[in-house]
Length: 263
Image 1 (spheres, rainbow, N blue to C red):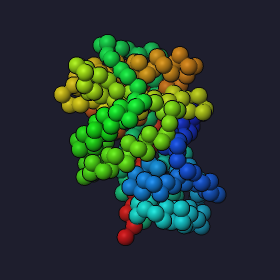
Image 2: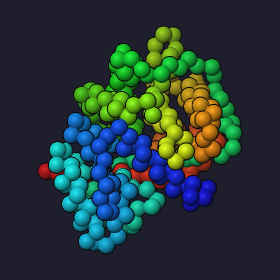
Image 3: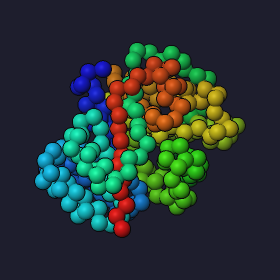
């Protein structure tokens, strides 16, 4: 995987987080700030931090305080292109590093396609209600959230924030026996990179190939729309990374979120 491809993946991740929410360019970073969802980190954060000197880093922190005054959270998303000086300062200031995400890119064809599944897009209010219930169960399990104690109200806010991303980031439900048992999303970033994200399967429906089938379906859609580079994110601490590797995805970079609650 070339440095250029890795950079394209980092750009796609930034685009996905920013999609549908107000953004502000600063000299050494980009800030997303949405007062409608003050508890949702992904829509209240800084990324693409290029600061290197102490003075430049101070301007980033000051800009975050200004733009994110509506929330106690200060969140910085970093990737392979974030200067080490920024990482050191975040660690020094007491920012907590959340579970690390491995960016994994598809190399060649998928090795497995899984079983036949029924998928339907999340479109109606009822569909979004079903998705919200699954998101709440995902949060309660704690694997993606790093065992944070997240409320049902937070699940509602997070789902609404994702709904604001619009048609450029379609969610799908997997239906079995008339009930939704899994969900996932996919998108094409403006730079042409395809991404598969937010995969979740109910514990009772796991180890049956559903995640594999979702990934295959999303990969087909992305490739049909001209995507040559397709990636997904895998938590470094969780088992799905091994499934993705068996399917043909290879690790190419790390994405981190650093979080501080200001009192």
